[in-house]
Length: 311
Ligand code: GDP
Ligand code: MG
Image (tube, helix red, strand yellow):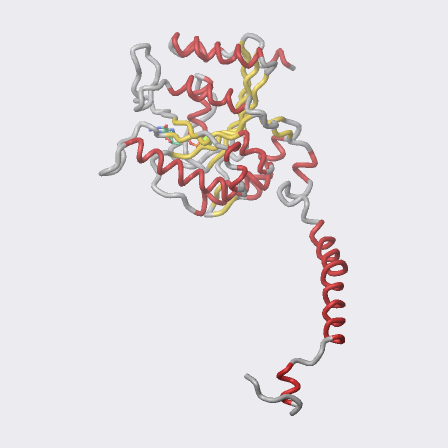
């Protein structure tokens, strides 16, 4: 099968400086015995998922549309280079008519069966001014499908990075506000607890897929900060791969089993029964015992006319 995977020729489309950096990063991964990388790309429709896939591969491999007429199925693009295999899975946006389309989600899960997700690119636009209910739903759907561990393997990718922020805000300020708002939503949706935060900082990476993206002297596409974004994105992907967390193995259990975030829920009735017999019952018994032993309080004796008024 491996012989059917196409050579990654798109890499030659990149300026020499980018090619050198990419080959260095792939070499580093190989040193760590990582010879395959499977990247899952998810997010709402029209945010730039497919464009980002094309930018990374360096070829127009998946179709891009200004209107939300994406195909209903995920597409996996595989390329090899110097013994290294890169798989990128582009998915259709999950939202339809204001809700997560469960069928679309199911198709994505089936497609991923028996695959291992090394990295999740959660894509959204930088030039959006608020986080809404749809973002929450997509984040929750991803968490419910693959478990919250997937966020340890995630990058938040913000497209349309070459923007002029609305009046009064400078670029960095705008970027940090947008990132914070989105990351907060991810933390809530993924139920990441405060104490887990430190080791699960999710990197935010900027992308500009437009043909009008500015370039540096080497011809590399750059962000407003001046950084070449393709090598930068790949570098952060390699960092996430090496952060000590586990890749997500999509097996039958994950797809058909209980929601991975709720797999301990069956313990709840047991816990309640335990509480009833070992905590509630003994307390009730103790209270009954106390009542039986109790000497009458002063007010009761008073009401019975046995004590003098002293209050
Ligand atoms: P998807 O539905 O998430 O796969 O989004 P597409 O990749 O199909 O992109 C939707 C539209 O946004 C297309 O018209 C793209 O050309 C455009 N687009 C995607 N990424 C960028 C970006 O980084 N900058 C700009 N200016 N346009 C983008
Ligand atoms: Mg698309």
